[in-house]
Amino acid sequence: MSAEINNREYRQQVLKELITQLHDGKSVDEVKDQFAAVFGNVSAEEIAQAEQALILNGLPVSEIQRLCDVHSAVFKGSIEEIHQPSDPAKIPGHPVNLLWRENRALEALVKEIRTRLSFGNSPSDLKDPLAKLMEIDRHYSKKENLLFPYLEQYGITAPPKVMWGVDDEIRDELKDIRKQLDSATAEQLKPRLEALFNRIEEMIFKEENILFPMLTENLTQDEWKVIASEVPEIGLCLIDNVPVWKPAAENKPQEELKKEAGPGVITLPTGVLKTEELVRMLDTLPIDITFVDKDDTVKYFSQGAERVFPRTKSIIGRKVSNCHPPASVHIVEQLVKDFRDGRKDQEDFWIKMGEKYILIRYFAVRSEAGEFMGVLEVTQNIRPIQEITGEKRLVDDTANHE
Image (cartoon, rainbow, N blue to C red; front, side):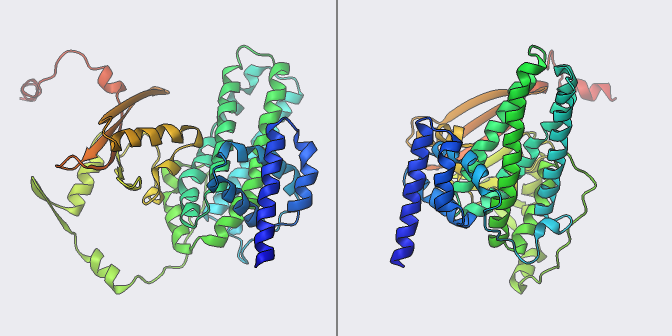
């Protein structure tokens, strides 16, 4: 046991030293041999545990991200494969199979754009394929909203945070390149596009050799079933005609069947509602509602017909700080702290999303005695409201139908 502890501490120390060297300006090539000497034959899970330990000890996620390119340079051909006997990547319709198929589609699209560049196409000829490449956001969103919450439940938090940070960097670079298509030449864009494509391909490798094995090692079939049922909430990336995965049905305990047999009744201070009435009423509101309790845990979200941001049932029970990209976590945490300490009761933000104008409002929820109970997030597309002019009275509307 002492040898195992010593090895673990030694590897963490090596990772720290490598990160420091990268931070000080050394290149991937200059440190990859040292990394390979220590980690070349170590399983992906052990490396993830070492990185997670560093984060728990206070090292910022952004520093761990410096190792991503080193991983890619060394891991190929050296990561210990940890697939289960029945590889879910080969089961049609399984969530891992969907992600695997999306990765093949992303590789094909990247190859197409590279071909256009090699033939000297103008930047305007890249607009359509780069617009299609924006679907990569759905691929990454499925990881962040469907898969990462389960890894967190199993105590695996560092790899998701690092991966999410790199995903965001890829998204931002793709968006910025698309903005430059009308003002830059193909020669100016080519190095940036090649660097972007390399990062996309590196992420594909990390998913299939690090993320997928971690997931298949830990998640149960019931958890995969929940994930599969929520894929449509986010959508697919560059693929269609996906078969429906139908795992074997499992018998529910008798107590669960009894609970589902009849609708419950909820008594409120101003009325009594059946559970279904309350659910449908909240889902019919033209706003998205999310509630986070006083312990910073997501407890509820509404499911309206036209959601502004994707929400999946896997976020229930998740810490709110894990539901946001690493770059914005500190803002969320400060806002919650201001609510908890009584410095604020409300905060509003507004952003443009295509033709939509999104108002995001946060409210401190307090008890009758003023004790902090949690945070309510209300999101709404206010563009239709901004376009309202004049008046439309109920009596006028009635008169028009007589």
